[in-house]
Length: 237
Image 1 (cartoon, rainbow, N blue to C red):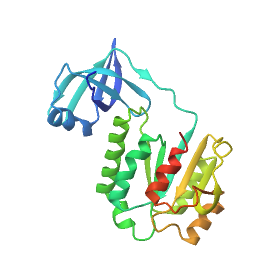
Image 2: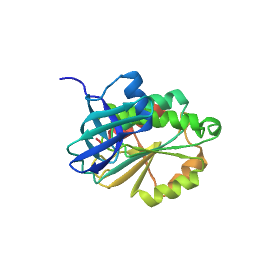
Image 3: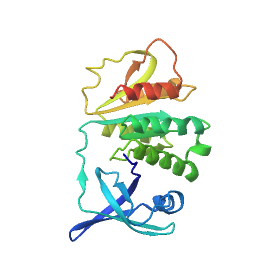
């Protein structure tokens, strides 16, 4: 079966067809990298659950690509919302980690700063790079919902958001008890919290515990933050 490339796009109804306008970040890939032409079949999705097979109708350089389809399919969102809040890691480690988190189905990825991370964490270049990685992984995994990336300069703002939007928070800690895969995952909205490679300070741990987070452990071994993030996210499957 011939591979069909997938692209992020928005759509609107036009009489008896749907017109898809590919995201501006995708146009260069269509015309300059893959060199697709009008008449080629592609997959399109809007990151909000809508998707379909479409036919390229117009390609204009690096700025415009349009496709048409006769129908639009809609994936019903899962009732569960799964998230991870992780302290910023080294850029290369974070870039390696993000695709796995997307492939494992996270709805939201929160990255919060600790000491010495702000210099690069909030730069437009880094944010743009992270978002491109998430989009690429979403396309590769054929996910129809694009995970949301949120970066937090202030952990108090993060804490308020988590309290408001998640029924259950789990703080990964070697001092915590082991996960109960039945009881712990009965909630509809869950967020796991992980520190950086250096861990969380006592003050940071205390802060998250005051939010109502429960301490949990992944076992007796000491895991790198990268490994722990993948392991704990896999528990959602």
